[in-house]
Image (tube, rainbow, N blue to C red; front, side):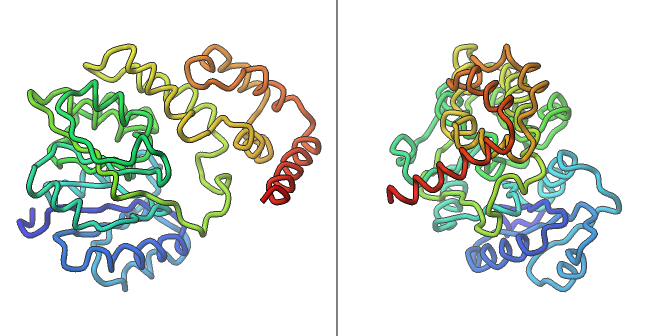
Length: 317
């Protein structure tokens, strides 16, 4: 471990060279002069990612011999990054930091928080102020609904132990389980919500449907999210139920616009919609009947509704 490096930002990537290029071009100037290292783990890309990264200066590059899957690659990011610094952030290649990263360095350097949690909303008044937490339930209640995004989590490398992540290897949320398990194991946990640094999404990805997980939204954010959050240790059951529903309400993942897009890309299949029927009341305030209806409507009609909605929005503006 390099004593001069305080934070390692590890980027997992696979066959997304234009997005990765933008990520590094955006990130490298922001860390100039700061004790931050960039690590990129390429999950055996078949495009020109390898050639580009081998020539790229200012990063540590690890190339997997074979594709080990997205979840295993994210876990590898945590494990490899923990070798370089006291703190780790696993940043998706399509996400960008908005704000002065020196503020983050100051927080982890001066106050040695177990976790610093970054913002993901520009215009949400609830998340517009910095906050310190010394109670796990208070922290979980406040940020739990945002915790699906790994890039928000800046965590001590000591969290990268099998006892904290082993129960979540089956899920898409290794980072969520690891963070809360780690904090639950602390006698006196100390966490901080840093509202001044916001994660934003690249403009190169114009639709969510282009991401690998999007068509599996129901499985991931209705079924898996439900059971991951319920399994978290040392958190009150009422708080867990709040976390489960907060995510969809904050991100509008099951809003009418998102459901239309999901149906158009083939991610709202009738059999899946029916299979997860008992979970909807816990996950979202959206009516299950609306979800069923959109799954049953003919695709041309769904596309017409979506297009009409966009035209109306433009007309109103």
